[in-house]
Length: 99
Image (cartoon, rainbow, N blue to C red; front, side):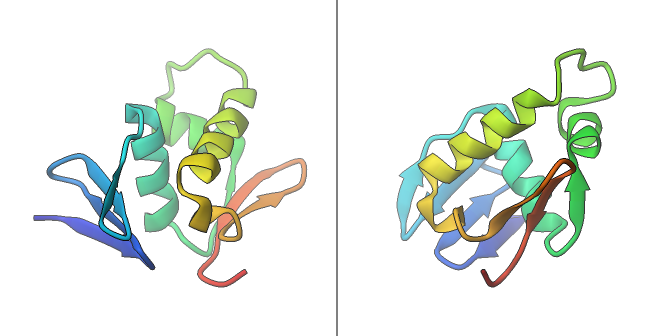
């Protein structure tokens, strides 16, 4: 089983499940993929365009605003992430281990 861990968050890639402190957290498919991508690339500054191409796929024709909306939803559903998903003004986001 492939599992990603970040603090109290456990992301089970095989079961497509996320828990925080053992409590199941319901994420959409894109929220799940975005969380996975952020955790796997922690410490790196990720542009909105990179996130769109790697999480949504090159064929995605929406604007980069969709990334912001999904980041906001992740922060709402997993409050522990608020201080770990850092906004890099006019560029994108960075997932950091410490605030």
